[in-house]
Image (tube, rainbow, N blue to C red; front, side):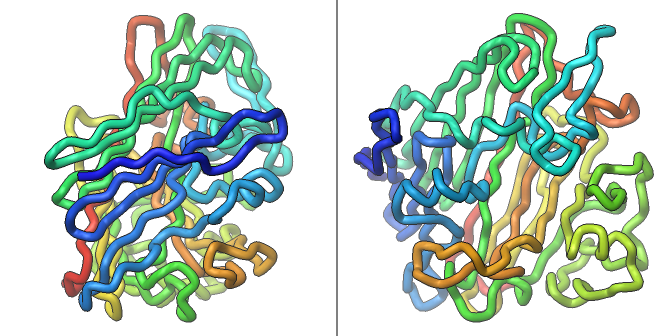
Length: 360
């Protein structure tokens, strides 16, 4: 394994942003930025042994600052949406910035994706390498109670497992939901056909319908017989344009949470499998979280130029985010997002990459 740390860019206030690249002997690499604890790049070979970038993103810092779109970012304190940006905890109402219409999204106006994290450790061993990043969010940050001490550990091993381990502790009761927002295109970033021809499996019998503002209604709906049934391998774009499904209309495609478990589990479970027939690449997603938000890149509108010099358009990549359910802070019937002093929050994510292996 190799681990290389380098200068990626400079923030307007003069602080330096680092890039840490982890590389194994099988041609798989991952680059992590200290800005936003961002997964900036993942490179993997195809069935012919040719490496390609399989995530969306930028090769310089400036686009991450001027037009943030969560490419590979760590999002929190509370990933996804909070209805009206408001929740109650122990009888006290807390307001967070409404940065998604009248609702809060991904932690607020200045979430974890827009902060410079401290690089604590970079290490490479015989079989794996890792980088540990750290950030302390002060009490009241973006309206959330309690000082939150967060670490994000990114690791890559010789089995092509890219792991992200989020951990957090607090000094007073708060709510937490942290995940990674990587955009995947296993055909290669900038490829002509986008990601709608990828095969997808999601290990879930039900999902959470949403209203027109993409806030869960509280219903748990069975996927059987709907465009949301990915229990068997199915091409993502196969039913993406079914206008008779109100949920597809609300999301402009898929932007929903699938219910994989009813709570955080002690170990990891398989949540989803993504495969691309031309390159032969596939990716399995494992986590300890109860839900996975599947987003089909519906709001990529051709106004962003990516690292390949191509415009990112609708369906050019997909996002699979292991997390708690959206708006869980306002839904006592959803898994609890509460974190108390003395407890540790954990979201462990594994992307198990298979370069050049034919999909099942």
